[in-house]
Image: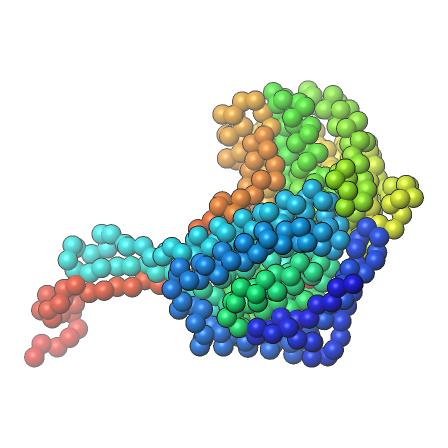
Length: 500
Ligand code: NAD
């Protein structure tokens, strides 16, 4: 069994209270690791270390190419240790082997991307602000300061890199809290940061719980920015705590993404796409396509084929290459999902597939939920409005595409959406009307570190990725440099300054 300490100010240390907690494998409930449990005092120590490293240390003032080289070294180490990180991610999070391989590869790629951004000056010239020769005007982007990052459990290493990459590239220092359910690969990332020689205090990683560590990170006045990924409920709480010192906030929250199939879509492709959209990682994706909108004309045929194919999804040991779907993260999450399934039944949805815990003995120790499909769902029902975060699909019938757009937008969320059609012009015109941060046409889940990602409405505040995402970790400064020189030529000379 592995053991992990807190990573604070360049050292691996025990928690102040000497408390620890276990991280469980959701497939068999075996302990994957024992982890030092950070408390409020540890959080304050980590914040103080990050503050000192920002105010007095080399990191924010380091030549850009040097800072970029550190990020590249982290990316290289993730690649070097990929095999071990994949195995750990499978054990700690219940990710299937296929998903974990992709996650580790994408984590390294994302860090490499931010190393390239880190090497480039973001400064821009503002042209035409004054007459030529009167002034030069620059927009410079400077690091914000101490970033507190709080992440969920569905993509443990990827989420850690999504925060560390842009925060470090922009010259900030950081305190990261992984989810208490999946802390292991983030603690391996701490080791990697240590090995590549990131200056002390620049990166601090403190596993712990939301109620104490998370709250302290969100409210501590020495923190300048909070970058949070998690549920909308907790996002609201984080934002309200951060408001006490008017911290900058990026919130990446929940979703209830609508997946619209048009009647001219390639049916086989759209069926596979709908399954991938909802059942990937057992539905535990913020951008999961959890509402499937089907036109009346193809509804029955589509549902018949979708149900038949869903029955073939192989639930099993996530370690095996042949497993399509693993367990959900915890007993609590399993119960929550089953509660929504009961609610769906009570609100008169038709249960067309799944709906329970699989009976197979092989799966009895894991937190499994069958891939579940409800048809005849009304968009106002609970299972169409609330984020379930499990393998539960709500199928909703529509008459016209105007109807489909209205239903898709009738949600408090706005993270992702999709349109399946063989007519790209038509699909694009629908995509433009959908109130969501990412809209896929004939595709799903493809999120790139090069393209901004984030939510409309209650799916979030701000964007991650791309240059927009990097700028979220900066303060913007206007530098005005006078070129007039002589007093008499100043435009303000005749206004308030008394003549001699
Ligand atoms: P969660 O909101 O329960 O927890 C997220 C993180 O917040 C965890 O680290 C947790 O310890 C911490 N936390 C909990 N209470 C806190 C508090 N009072 N103050 C500060 N921090 C606190 O979410 P989860 O169950 O870990 O993850 C699932 C959720 O994450 C889903 O809603 C999903 O949509 C969302 N998510 C969003 C994105 C995105 O990019 N939009 C990506 C992945 C997951």
